[in-house]
Length: 245
Length: 79
Image (cartoon, rainbow over all chains, first blue to last red; front, side):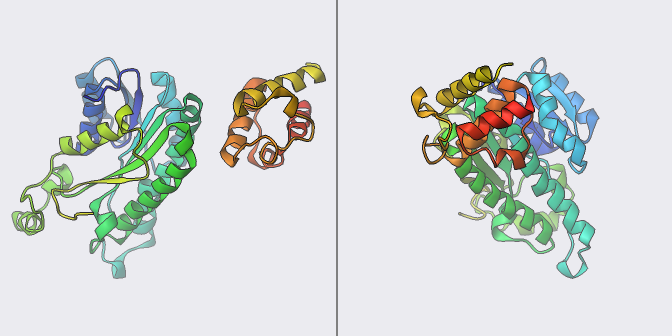
């Protein structure tokens, strides 16, 4: 249904479960995809799987210079950059009383500041072609809060305010800026939880199951599509009813 | 590059970008007050000038370019 033929997308955190699936979804819709992440092995494997239109663009988003150069590298590899998916994220969970400055800063740097810098560097080309999509992967935690995740929740909520402001600024230029906020999704991150922990979380999900990365990817493909051209500044919650926002 | 040539090229970019009539683009015409630009238009205009003339206009200089005349004189000294 959603056709992204001719569009070029950059996905950060593509070596992770959700990011990889987002890249698959965009590629399946016809887009060329730039796969960014810190782990080159999984990126290469994914690029092999996706074939010709996929490009491996390793980048450590905590490295300011590498970060700044990434959109340029994406344009060089793909010819343009029409869709930016800021998916990369890290956690440094800790109770506030024990949270170090480093725990706070590193999460803010990668999960929020990198989003700003990549968006800024991608805008010029989008403004020129009068078409662009920025999709930021937030989290349910940004809306509800979560003990032990003050840093992560602050970054993910900050991302929502950032996206709304940028959406205003570029709304007349055919560029939309939106967030997708996943709930409890089956990934390597949630795999580490014990059965008791999982059961405790699932009690709070009306659908009684975890979401799949493909269900996040579908939301991203929609927001990246021409059909979503009238949707901007919004957050699409994909959480099985865990928080109805 | 002759000075008249710069003026012509800058005027062409302004007309193209803001969709105004050529004769309105006078020396003292303010992009925002007289030519209907919004703040984002002015940023885009500067981007267009950068490309047209192959120069880089730093942000603090860009902020001083408010009129057609400002743009022409900045580009003259930068090229």
